Length: 327
Ligand SMILES: [Mn+2]
Image (cartoon, rainbow, N blue to C red; front, top):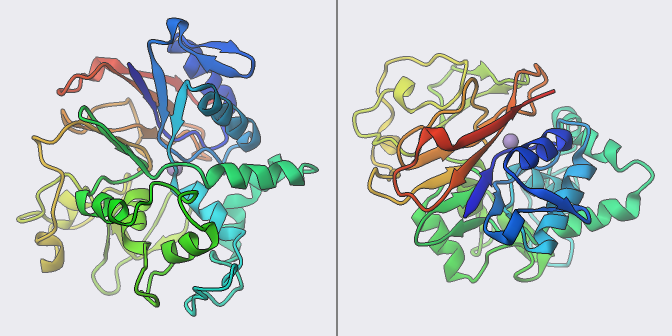
């Protein structure tokens, strides 16, 4: 039926190994399952961190074109599009919040994270542009009667907000306008798409209490923490709600604004996502909540690339994880 595959981050060698382990066979640059009875859903984050971003994009695109995979957009693909997008391109929606000329700052940290992707296209500028055009076509989410899938967080109101405007990806309209709306974090224009895309691609976050901060896996100082969006926050503590592997939070209750937020209930259909840099042996978060990002992109080299073999079951089964170790 469907094999969901989490974050890849330029690790094409491991991706090929994982596809072979899942029983897929290579035909003319794409992998397909014998008889065509299974297909892949890639959950996003194909580029950055590893050295093989170009090879990864080529393989993912070849499978999409061959009809053997659906490829969703990750925050790294979104960020790459913003990085190369001039503020005000196409006329409307010049955003005052961006002062650097582009819709993503060219700051040291942001250049550093994207550099390996650019390096993998050295001498292939035309191919690089075609890669960006491919990224524009990646859907933000996928939903059927049996499952939901997106890079970071499922939120029914965010999906509905995109449905209301008829947008499933950046190719569903004028790209220059849509990406500006997606970056409009201060609602400078009435048609901002910032909130729904931020939630789907990056997940909900909470400002830490004044004065608190921590360093993430790459040493960047963070003043917001990622939230476990499937937990009822009503009586939760910071520790209960935080999804920052390796960082300890306190037992103080979450702020009122968080206590009232909606969450992904136990009776919902299974949801698959990546994004969260989990560590260790792949495990289900809950019988209907399955994260497939096990940090293949970590510079520490301890990561795994993980798949879940889905056959429509509404109670997920931990024995259906398949993975390869990072090399
Ligand atoms: Mn990622």
